[in-house]
Length: 381
Ligand code: PMP
Ligand code: GLN
Image: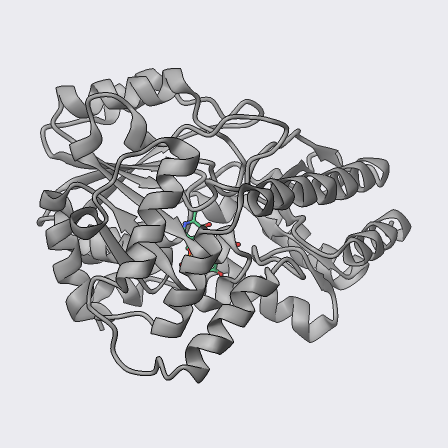
């Protein structure tokens, strides 16, 4: 067994979901929506299956979807993308990330990631020969630590991975932070992997700025999106990569030998989703903001300290005052067993972590599910 994988356990999302299911708890841990799937996508997928789309589609993805990815980015972010040369369809953003790391990294290349960091990055970076260099964001502000970032850069630095809006904390990188990252990328000749899977899940009229739109770095950004997030179909595993052809080509080579293609009927349906009118996207934002208000308000009443959040579908609670014993994992398990509500601990988003005071709840659920969870938490203790 390769030592990178030998040293890896089961992901926190899987293990908390398992515990939640075994105990009949309400699962607000792993991030997946309940009841948000647009009917238009489901119909388009069924129609495509009935129409006979069952065989290998083109390796880069169906033209209809690659075009829709480019058109959607034009409509919402004013990006000009050549869909024929600059868009690749993958089996989820997870595959897109793996393709990118495997294609771009060489032995001992260093990759900067910002903690708390999504769990799919580090292991594949290491398996690709890279060295993970974490730069830590800390509560309560989760600010980009510019000095520590500069200190982390060495002649071996090759990539910076930026997840905006950011899982698990909901941070939206602002234009001055993006400009700072861009300046560093140019100065040190780095590539930025922009994990932008939550691009459409931004509320309260907050703007989202893509790294791909930042002046002067278009040819150094690999932008990654996910239909799972934009259309609440996480099990479909349809993702997309947008990058300058020179970067996209090696990433497509990796894709060619990892999955080669992605189910064509789902590609057709996701294209229909990306082409839905603006009202779908504004409706999704409004619905999520409403569920955010419901859960955050209820948790605050139940005694949880929750930070404001305007993006993703996660709310983060500071549990320091809740007799958590300085252990967010034990607290998450206890909440599952005693209250019947499952969160995930934020410490699992750090490589080596002494921040054990926060847990994450997913609010992309039916109102009745959230109300039941709030009721259970109110009666707990
Ligand atoms: N990046 C981040 C930050 C995520 O939260 C997720 C969702 N789990 C992914 C990537 C993976 O997306 P997908 O389900 O499309 O593989
Ligand atoms: N991205 C999802 C989350 O943060 C989980 C995906 C997974 O289970 N790997 O909850």
